[in-house]
Image 1 (cartoon, rainbow, N blue to C red):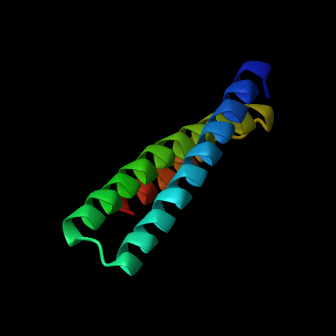
Image 2 (cartoon, rainbow, N blue to C red):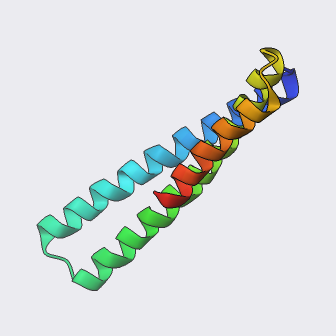
Length: 97
């Protein structure tokens, strides 16, 4: 695997982990809001923020997967069609999910 894409992969991984920790804190905050009996509207605003943060993280995870999948296909001399089929399967699963 070439160094540039490995470096980019590592940066994406670091970014995703940071986002997940932030999301974890947001979810704990929502739990606290529910326990404290806060207004439903305020809770829903926070839930929307978490959902948006998860969508952003999903995009980065997908990008990292695509970089890795492509690099591994080149390294392993996998047929392009096979690599493309695998990528399409993951992408459609992401879209449907």
